[in-house]
Length: 95
Ligand code: HEC
Image (cartoon, rainbow, N blue to C red; front, side, top):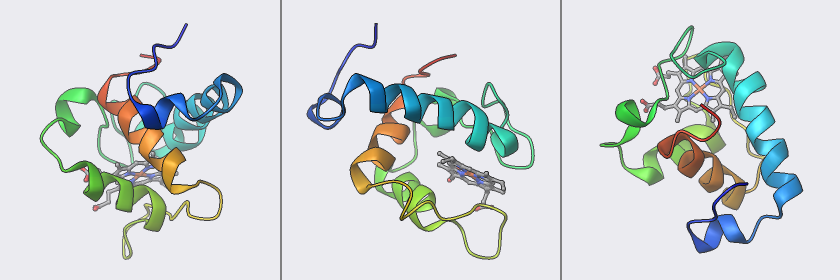
């Protein structure tokens, strides 16, 4: 059972949250590692992200990091979904 900690998480239904977690583990995991310990991309574990501004990470997810392999997900993910992913990474969801 996922605990819904914030209003933004609560606004996404459980089915979509499950899809996002799958995306995080598999699609994001192809570069960041299935357990987010890093690979082509840096590790995305709570300890790695705790001190980073949430907005900076949301921007990385939505717009990618030009000049690096980090692709943009805007169009596939809403801003709310990008926020959910950042929150999920920060609480170590699914690890
Ligand atoms: C094709 C490989 C690839 C995929 C797929 C990918 N990333 Fe990345 N990601 C990277 C790389 C490489 C960087 C480092 C970019 C840089 O040097 O600034 C990065 C950076 C990031 C950062 C910034 C980390 C920081 O320390 O500032 C976040 C957050 C992130 N990725 C999340 C995701 C999420 C969430 C997904 C899936 C929706 C994803 N990434 C998919 C390669 C990838």
